[in-house]
Image (tube, rainbow, N blue to C red):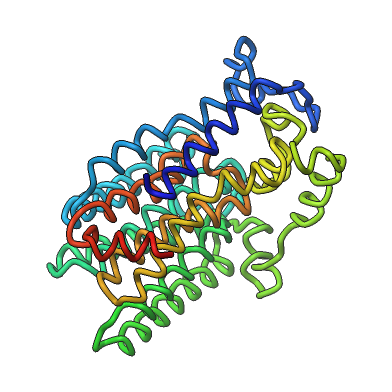
Amino acid sequence: MRPEVFYIFLSLFTLIFFALFDPGVNLYGFDATETSENLLNVNLTLYVLRNALLYIPMVCYLALRGLSEKELKLLAGIVALVAPFSIVAFLYDIEFLPSKNIMDIVSLGGYGLQRNTYVSYLTFPFIASLYLVVELRIKIFKLSFLAVELFIFLYMMVSGCRQGMIFCIFMTLLMLMCVPTKNKAIKCLLFIIACSVIFMVANYYATSEYNVHDVIEVRYSSVAGFFDTGGREEIIKDGLGLLNVQEYLVGAGLSSVIISGPHNDFIRWTQRIGIPGMVLSFLPFFLSALHVFRYMQRKKKRPMLLFILSALFFTIYHSCFGYPREDAYQALYAFLGLALWLAISKSEPISNHKMHTYLHSR
């Protein structure tokens, strides 16, 4: 059994064990039905288990089946092309369209746009588009996915999702630096030009007739405003302060935090099952990322492996700001990165005797 798969099942058995002894403590005193009215008649412990188990069959299926590079490109293409239609559908769902112009989003300051959940999900289609722009050879396809990238990034910008923008910028720079190409200088120049254009567009709408919300102006008016954490450190500190010494080891219970909380999945799982349990639940993601990084050092299939590495970091990164493994928008993609690595590393040409020897030697 692959080490990643072993730790997936070990973490699940650990959760089931903790579920048997859940004391039913409510750390924050919130009403769980604010998450869903269906929770009124549902055991909260089973609800948390359901969220943890929901996409494990997908991970196991792809790990057993494997994926070819061609299939990976097709999957990335579907994920990327769905995103623009998803944005339009979302704006219709919140009744923003068709009554308002899409650029009027700047007047909302991100309120009602679900920045930490829906907008964060869009970073996965962004990295899928980025992978295809680098990897595809047909210019019309490259331009199409580049347009998807820009559309997603501009939507993040006008919705005020800084965490999403930072993730996308970092992954773009990583792709530019790590992918072997004779035109690296030109690509870096194009990236700088794109950032400059986006900045000028933001500046234009900040000074135009559009009613730009104060939150948007503050976040983009200075570097300090852009990186302001909004007191997240205090929220995390307060969340940890709710635990006693014993609960740092075993947690306060699987259902102790259902809604809201510390805005950090690492802290939330510490609250639920303690530090050892939290580490175990994230271990498959970190272990997979380490394997991808080490294999990248052999300078083979860099764009594909960078995409998978980005997909794994999608879960790790957004867990610092929310709960991607339990969010309705992000959960599928939070587990998809893990599934993609297990599937690709099983298939040719990566999955060969040398590859397995390399992984197990580590």
